[in-house]
Image (cartoon, rainbow, N blue to C red; front, side):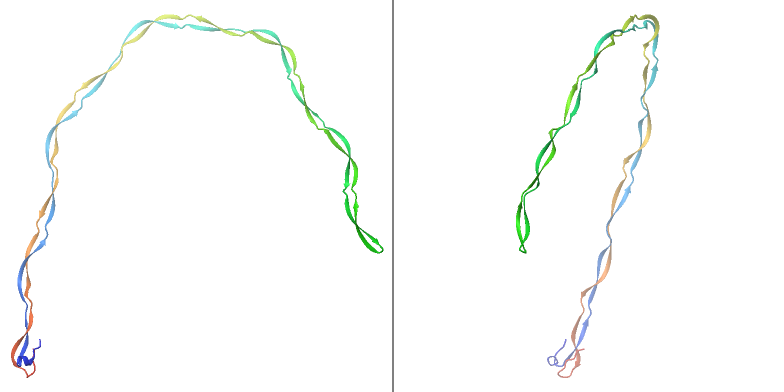
Length: 273
């Protein structure tokens, strides 16, 4: 800060620093936050007595044998039956007409009928021919008409073509004697009556059977451990921990100011220290 010497009347000033002012401030800070701890509580068991089945009720099978007795009965010794007897066949001679050779159709080829004929044919057609002659030492050309030339020739023509003629040959028969069955062989059945007799036979009066005897169940008492209260997990809350710490806080900051001092300066100057 500059001070005009004329305004201060020649007074001198020095810059003085004022230190900041601090005070001690106490506050709580958290050392450890609150948390939860899981603790397992074991189950509670106790011994109880209970009635249990030692041997279940069951059935025992007991076989009762069958009862038999002897009885007399009429039995068939030989059943009625039929005996087959064959009567031979009776034969005789019979005349009959038989076909020795069947009727049949035979194809016969008839050759064609030919004939020689004469005819007039054209050997060369009528035409114009260019002919050159010499007259008085010079050549004279003229078109000369030549008539057609004919000749007689003989050729064979077919009057009737070849053909196939079918001729029927009748069947041929003859008389033959053959043996025929006058009466066929047959089977005659003769009945033989049944033969009966008496015999002793063991019959079942009462069949074998299975009887089931009931054996009652057997019970007994035994001790077993049962769970009264199951194991569980308990969560316990641990509170947060705090402690008091002190720290210096600034009440007012330091400052610098000009303060007058007992010293004269030259007129017209201001001093600053």
